[in-house]
Amino acid sequence: MLLEELREEVWRLHLELPKNNLVTWTAGNLSARDPESGFVVIKPSGIKYEDLRPEHMVVVNLEGDIIEGDLKPSSDTASHLYIYRRRPDVNGVVHTHSRYATAFAANGMSIPVYLTAQGDEFGGPIPCGGFALIGGEEIGQVVIEAIGNSPAVLLKNHGVFTIGKNAEAALKAAVMVEDVAATTWLALQIGRPEEIPQYLVDKLHYRYTHVYGQ
Image (cartoon, rainbow, N blue to C red; front, top):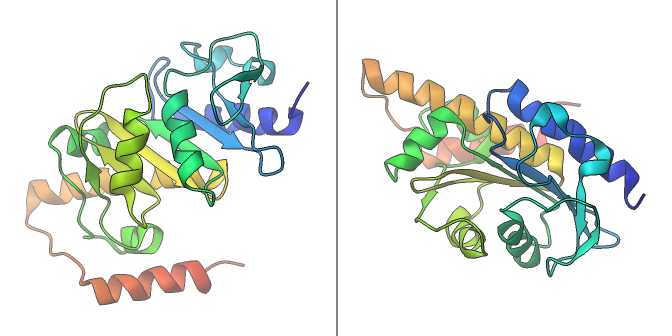
């Protein structure tokens, strides 16, 4: 089986999406690019998460041709591939309709930096891009246009896309987007939170990316 280890990783990381309440039923998807071959492993379309197995994952090239797999790839595959073709630094992409973040997306609202956790992880506001229909490259185009230096972007009336140096990093960003969005929403119900100035956000983000952890 081609890219067996990467298939196993993509399958395992998919199970984290419902575990972290980021998806419902069969919505959402995650992909990973193999840096050596350039091939992408992505979830098949319309399969329940509990029914997924590593061998169900579909391997495609950057043009969308199926290299290996018996099932149809995700309906978001073209957008994932558009992102990979334009961001050689990205090897993982996640798409969710997580509840609180998508509520901001439904209103076409970016998420300002009210929380140090957002400054740490994202280094600035979480932007919101425009509206695009599913099925082709259009969503990927909006992601590239709107995401800037952030690992996450909201899509108007749709949901969330996150990117990372690998699939696990993209998944972490997706988890953090929803956590930040939920806390921000709660804060807006009880008061008017103040944005953290960008110079302080820059300090938070530098410490988190250069000093924090082992």
